[in-house]
Length: 178
Image (cartoon, rainbow, N blue to C red; front, side, top):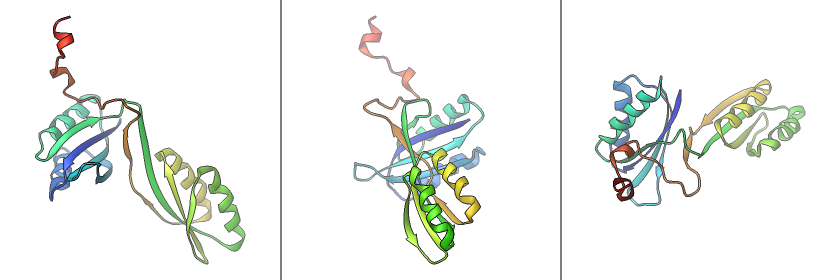
């Protein structure tokens, strides 16, 4: 089962290496990683998509990640209402006859042409991974020259708070006296 795990970390050399090493040691495959600065200086957000056998393993991963130096917070957001996006650049072979077909084909995907050459176009598309997969499948018959994808990035929708894996350890004052 696919799990989406996000974490905030101190932006320091070696942090990504230590975290990916944890996955490697335990033979977990990382399907995608995205990393970028957050709204707070010196803090980065990482989003991992991993494929695990069951929720127990996902919980074990989050606990191990929480123990890592420079890791501030780890959350498995898979079961929450989340916004998921990916970016892809797709270089497609074109001829004068197929150029207008491709323009028409990408329009419903809200994709854009970002580079034009005599024998190719580069299409930029953002959205959920399934949307990108669908566009790539439609463009395959024209001849894909290259595909570059950023990987999944995600966070919870609206004002909901990311639930921590350690939530059962904390008891609010209301719960204590009820």
